[in-house]
Image 1 (cartoon, rainbow, N blue to C red):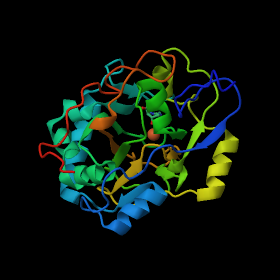
Image 2 (image 1 turned 90 degrees about the vertical axis):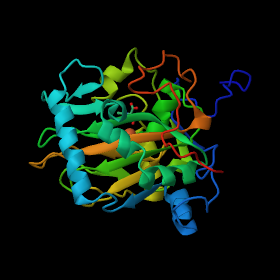
Image 3 (image 1 turned 135 degrees about the vertical axis):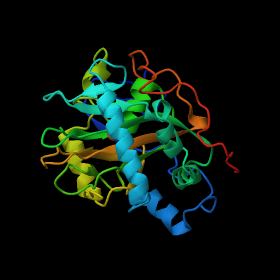
Length: 303
Ligand code: 6CS
Ligand code: FE
């Protein structure tokens, strides 16, 4: 591609040609390091590693109410319902989306200060929910999530302009080495990997079961892991992982006899609201990528 035809978007992806790694063009910490509950050392740790794991952020009693609500949503979910994803091989529920709108309890969790104040400190502004879901990863049959950067998808398919979002995953069940815990590559959020291959039509219908586009090549993964290794944070139910929107992550299948259920919420800066997608497909449905940008917390953020 000549420089005259080079797109101005630094984070273009899914085009012809080989994969490429570029330096991230955005800060990781957008706010003042002392404007929130994290210590400066904790902020610096998030800046360099791209994630923060807090064991038992929610108590066993709180967590039990979350788990009961998750079971209720799973039981109410029918294949074909908007926002309900079924496992590719079995008929079990894999994910239920938009739970911050369909459940009062999860709306309260989404605006909990233990989460929101940390995310706002990192992103330096008020935040809204870009996407929320529960991933059930059922016993024995829960399939893997292949390695990916969430930002790559949200940029190309949803129109998220910059790397200014943080995901929060609350383990509603224990996450251990047997049930397919989330794995992250520390430091990988500082590199953007362009992924080869054009996005197929209605890609999300396939990608939410098994993602095959917008995933790094094996060479790209080998390079990132050589630099940063792999970490799989493990802990009791109620433990919570905060992770930067561009960190490379994935998870293996669940071969254990118990489900691995995680509540997952994406916080985007209100100053980074989604636009038209940066790829060449229409925007995905709003249950995957919200297009209303109301701050999640009733208490405004003070810069
Ligand atoms: O589609 C999404 O928004 C999320 N789900 C998958 C399987 N990959 C990208 C992103 O994490
Ligand atoms: Fe992801």
